Image (cartoon, rainbow, N blue to C red; front, side, top):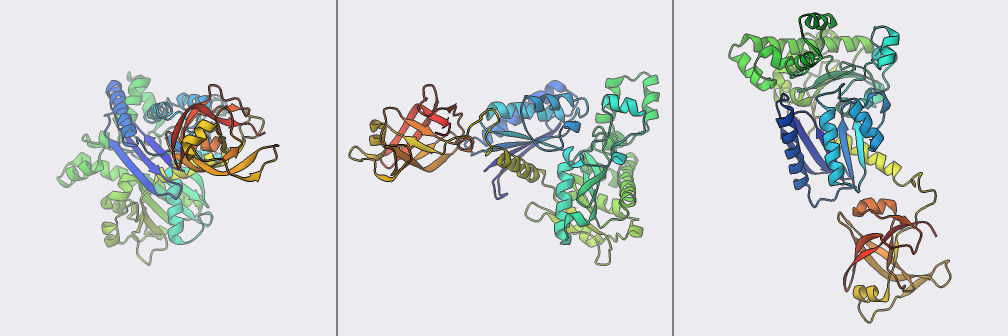
Length: 505
């Protein structure tokens, strides 16, 4: 089962094709799709990136598509097959994640249009945090107001935090449910998570992805009173949204860029605002580490991941300095030399004397999405749909004399090997291959005797594998059914109709 993973954000599109053994078959990335300021330009650039992706994967076998959706709200604590209800939920949370959900939704719509015959699964960034205790999800505002408006803390980057904690547990050779781990996902978006015995106990992002750490263009924590002051000064909702989501963070502090590499270069050249941006970023992250160690009553490992966490040794060093009281002793050489790739996805950066391990992890959200999407489809699709109250017949085919001759030769005859329960019918020695738009299925048994109409019966899972839309019918009712190509030792036949998911008979 091959899973296409689509991760579409405000400024980038990442995609990967991953097989059932977790082997990466294909991957691509489109960055800097827009500056986030021009909606028309953004829409055009995202559409072009999606078109380019579909061109690149043309001809590849795809069995399921997994989509990263940032905000699923309280409705989605687990992955979900995408239908109109899920689409409506994604759309409803656009105001809560304006830099993420609109682009995720656009990618879902484009992919469903391009690949309409296969299941699409939403993997929600909020799901890993759904089990946080109420003390972590509750804001200290009027309880009735919060309840009425659904104001609570959700948390984000859950896919990455869960993956990073799992890699750390593997490195420590201990079950994740025995460990207290602090994970830092540091990139253009940034968040911290306290993973206590395998579960998210606390995280820095809240009702929206705006709370918490300093980010590329987002502010992170800001005193709510500051926003009231700005409203009194003439700011409105839209201008505050623009300020907090797109004109703050590293970009707002440095006045240069949201790219830490550019800011570090400017700081090295003496730019004071760039130095301030770096210091504020590191200080905020370090502060959360201390808070989460206290909240969990200790910590066994600290994990740094995401673009900054994986690639900036200087930022890792700044964040981890002065944490010796927790038992963190940074190894400067290991930190400087740390390099993580897909085939070498972690690096230890603390000394042997360190009681708390600090580990750099190459995040792999695409792999986590593929695993979760695949698991849901495998658990869901073999079970007959609730709208189909009877079982589906196993795959086989009935052929006319003309089609049989074209596939096996004019002198061939059906060779019985086993009588069936239906009087006069038998399983034949001969087998054919079914060829669909996406894949083929070999070794499909022919049943005899020959008939007056061709009929090919497959299961619902075969339908997804072949990339066809076969109607559920009673056996014998093939008028207006799906087309299919058959291949035998003597040739191929393309049937204009005859492919069905037959009710058991």
